[in-house]
Length: 170
Image (cartoon, rainbow, N blue to C red):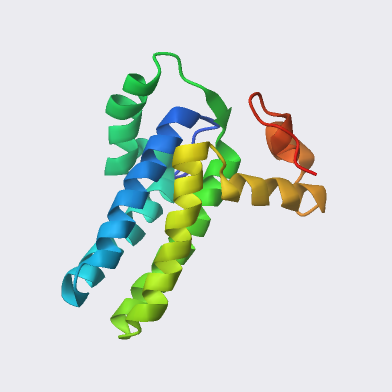
């Protein structure tokens, strides 16, 4: 297996699995916020590692990703709901940055700032888990609109409100 293959992200992902993974992130982030400082640093580090593994290879290397794909998502729906992988990787990258910032803040003793950053991460992951609204995917679509990402990179992302079940927001 080449290095490129080892770190390939799936072209399509099961949206139900992504939502389950987001729910697991919400749970871990909330626990991280609630525990005292030494444990908080360890759990924040686990969040960083989890996001890094998902950015590196999708659910292949991530314990949360594997649990979601193989156990949780099949219980949500027998039929997967396939969506483009590129915006999901973008969203995971944003999660990696945010969790890394929170981890660094916790290491630096700036607990309140770290909690605020994790709070924002919780809100974004909760929107994905509970509502099916991926903030990172929406941002990806906005970057397409301004021409920073090619329109053919993800056709579905160019207009998130065109997806089945979504209503236009004016």
